[in-house]
Length: 327
Image (tube, rainbow, N blue to C red; front, side, top):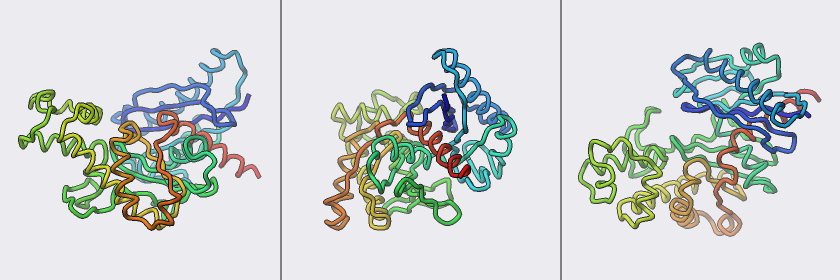
């Protein structure tokens, strides 16, 4: 049985899966990234996880398998043509020849791309976007990024830098962003941005149920899930915060929609877990700012396979590239 390995690399965890030719995840394992050990250690872990997954699935299923190729979704700026991780801040990588090293280690064809692009590719082709031709995907998590899939192909732009939606400077925002700008969308509307805003407000004495849940000595424990929990209990501050974040996301998307004209927008990452708490204000703002010809046809949905989209997308991206290279 021929399968493809898909690997989704994050600053905290690496998820590796084996995916069949139809896009079905057959086997999946997860390990801590341990980026502080350096790039060589992380690349070795990726290779070892691919081998572990192959052996584990073969033993578990009693099926002989052959891993045809591996796809790796990496954070940050990636040059998929050269196989180089140009810059991954949360991994501490710069100009790393990831493909060369992994192919030498695995003796397999290896293909890399940005992790958001592979995630969106997985959702567009095999998840919520299946059957749609023009799909814009956005991930709302530690940061905010997006990717566009048109007729089964990812859009890259000049220097492979398309999709940095989180670094649109938004009117009314002023917080500094690690990218060097001030007022970027993700400083407020990402999961980490909302948590940061909440901590700042609570330290300033904002009235909220969160004050009793997280006194000063426990404030660092507050998470995006806690904001959703407070929202569901009717906390005015949590509701206001998520309404603002959703509206900002909708406004940013209103800039993107007229440029790329998608028929479907998929919200993934932690934003998908927030559901209608973010989606409703997002859609209200988005639809109020775009032409009726866009609004009447455009659908906005959450990711269908939020946990596995990165693995599926990476593996099926590898399949696409490998078949193309063989022709």
